[in-house]
Image (cartoon, protein in one colour):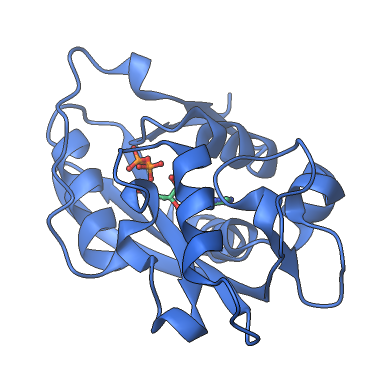
Length: 195
Ligand code: ITT
């Protein structure tokens, strides 16, 4: 029987990606939890916010809980939107507004280097067991392109590609993304420490 892992996120795109990259686990979303609380992301770092989300859910279940805090860091914008990636455009989780604001901020700016970063926190019984981070370098395009993925994927071309993650599709994204890199560290940790 596969071990269960509850992903402490309201973003079902993250759940889909994590599920497809963790085939040896039964990956559940928050519907596995009765009345999951809204967790205020009051931290200043991805690690702080990921820990807040993992612990809040882990206090409600004896099962393994995984949280993902992630975002986009743009060099010319001093690392913005960073931990504010989900609400950059002014409305929580509105990808279209976020992308619009990003393009506006970068208008006329030549240096468009950026990276996606992801910090995962694994928790159980209300305690953090370990954290894992990953990043993927790339560039912000001049206009959105492609229909795959979510969030800033239509604007982000990973290093070595002209196409966005949204154009490249899930197989290529999941072979190199920030989430893929942090999940690789998670799986090797779990195979060593969770028997
Ligand atoms: P939870 O907090 O419930 O997990 P969320 O979407 O609000 O869901 P975050 O606070 O971690 O998650 O914000 C992450 C934002 O960063 C997300 O909404 C996207 O805008 C962006 N992002 C993160 N990973 C991404 C990816 O793989 N592709 C595109 N955008 C991504």
